[in-house]
Each structure stands twice: as structure tokens, then as C-alpha cells.
Length: 80
Length: 379
Image 1 (tube, each protein chain N blue to C red):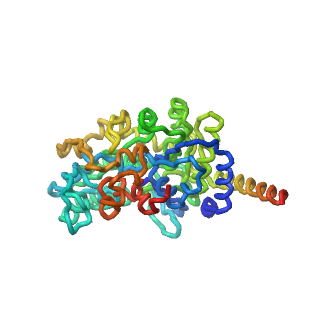
Image 2 (cartoon, rainbow over the protein chains, first blue to last red):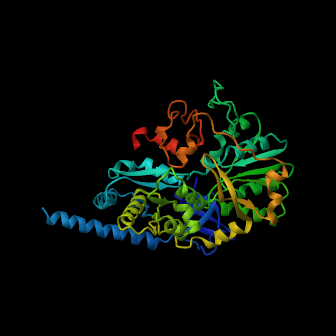
Image 3 (tube, chains in turn blue, brown):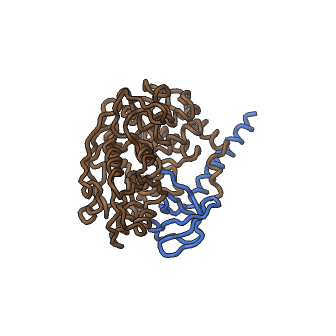
């Protein structure tokens, strides 16, 4: 039930915004993320945006993994 | 967020599984997730099959529908019988039964036992409506002033701030025909109860991603410190979950519990403080009953004095009465992680998603439903 979906804010009017949730545009309440701007990615749960998504954080996690993956491959090649 | 697919990347999964196997200290370790969405994700991606021998992923009381006591379901059924009353609910609550009268099987329906659900009440002609967002109820209430609207208010911290907003909004616009049957729950007090239980041993908590968006990962520090159990927040893609499991195992190996966050793209140390403030503005913590677990101090939420006129139980003078669980149903043990669903005698025999006996099979995010849908051999 705590499922939340990421979407991009298309427009904001007062306390509501139109969010693109994977191609579906939906009215979403923004009271819980007053700092949000158009263009931001947000996490949407039961009609409310509950957090602004830190894209930089997501990239950093993936870069760490990529780095680890590359070092593993190099190690495997060296041992061949 | 076009990079979400990378959190399902096969190569990333392989690396993390390899790392997990090489770091695993051996012996039996039980990690508990306390989130229905994790329960489903772990089953859907077959993550149990990738774990080292001895590492058990068990499910705790993470599904709000499953932990809602039968007394609340009974109250919602009673409310649906009042003339001019509209019941507003999230879809998952439709098929949960309240009181059970064991042994009286009703043939020719999807519900095996004799007692009612909101779904049956709707079929009988009651006005029961499923909504996506609770604020939608306020619009209905404005348009249909001759009816009373009652929202079956369930959910953890992810859901409750939105409900609090709708209560504040209802007060602001002076709506006199909306009410709330409050059964919202807080997850950390339940984790305390599990840690104190003598019959469960938990070595690590996989903490709920979207509850943590609101409460922040620091909220689990009291659990980690008090019981020396590592608590790591996880997202819902396989890479997210494996990152968290890796972190927990590393903490167990180093014998330093602490808290971790493997879902940094949305979870922060303090969470969404704005949402927490709104929740506390409307609700105050109280002792509350959890289905199958019992009464837990400070784990429920009651409306504060300035909002009690929205309380459906007070308005319609309905008392909550505790109910025994159906005969043979082991949802209580499943919710506490004492057994896994196939260890219940009713599982997949008399209790299936088509004819559920207990709430863990009713809810799409219940442990029993997850085991049933993705195969008994998931362990």
C-alpha cells in the first residue's frame, strides 16, 4: 500500500500540480513538498507528492556500482 | 528518472549477489522486511533464491491492510448500514472480512465464510466508493451535502500525512459531512514490539523505503542502538534491495549495528519534516491493536482534540470490539515473522486469493498472497 511512483512535474498551480507519471498526466497535491519546481521529479503516493527525487543521488549510486563492476571485470580478465 | 531501469540491471544484480555470498559470515541469519511492497518485490524478483544458504528473508507487519484489526472492519460494515452514509476506502480494504463464524461456508460466492466485507456490502446496495486520493472525498462531500462520507483511514507514515492534510482542509472549508474511521499505524513502535518478543529472532531490519521518505532513516537509530540490530532502508528495485541486504550483512559481520540508507535518491536522515509536522498537528500517538499481534503502545494515531468532530466512531456512537482470529488462521504468526506462509495449515488449501481466510491472503501485498502468487517454492 505504500507504493509510490516517480513522475515529472509539468506545471504547478497553487497547491496542485500536473505530474507526468510514465506518460499518464495526473493531478497531484503538492502540500507535502512546498519547495517543488516545474521540471523536478517527485515521488507520488495516493495523490500526494511526498518527496522530490534527488537525481544526483541516484546517479552517484549507479556510478559506484558501475565502477565496482568494471573493477570486477578487470580482475576477471587479469586472472585469465 | 530515466535511469530507473538501471536499478534492475542484471549485471548490477550479479555483482551484488556475488559480493553478498563472499561477505556472508555463515550460520543462520534472519532479516525482516516490514513493508508489503518489499514483500512483493522480493517475491516478484525471486530474491530469496539468490541468497546464501542460511540467510532468510522474513516478512513482518508491513502491510497496513493486514494489520488492521477485525474490529475496524466490523465498524466499517456497521457504518455502511447507516442510511445516507457513503464509505470511502482504498481498494485493498474491500475484501477483508471482520468477524468470522467458522465452519459456515457460503457456497457460490468468492467469500468462504459467513461474515461480510465492504465488497459484499456494495453488492447489497451500500454506497461504498474506492478512491485514489483522500482529498477526492472532500470534492464528493461538497457536491453531495445530503450524505455523510466516512473514510476508512488506514496506512503507515507514507499515507497518513495526506490524510492529515485532508482533515485540515475539511476543517478549513467547514465541511460538516466528512468523518474518519482512524486506524493509522506507526512502524517503529511495532519494530520495538517485535524486538522484545521472546519467540522471534531478528538479525537485521530491511526498513521500508516509502515510510522512511517521511520519517527519515534516523528514526531507526533507537532500534539499532537498543537491540544491536542493524536497520537499513531499501528501495524497491532489485538493486536497491540487494544494496541494503549487503549493507546489513556487512554490519552484522563487523558487529556494529547502526542505521544505513540504500535509498538515497528519496530518503534523507530526517525525512520529510513538513509531512511529519502536518501528521502530528492532526494526530496524537496512542496504544493500538494490530491484527494478529495485539496491542502495542504508541503505535496508533487518534485525532487531536480540535479535530475530534471528524471522528466517525464518536459521531455515530460505534464501539470497537476485539475479535478472535478465524480458526486455524495463522496470520498473526506470519505477521510477526514466526512462521512463513506455507507453514500455515490453511495456506493454498482452504485459504487462497479467491477464497481468503486471513488478511495476509486478502491484501495484494500480504505475505501469503505474495507466496501464493509467486510460488510456494519461493523460499
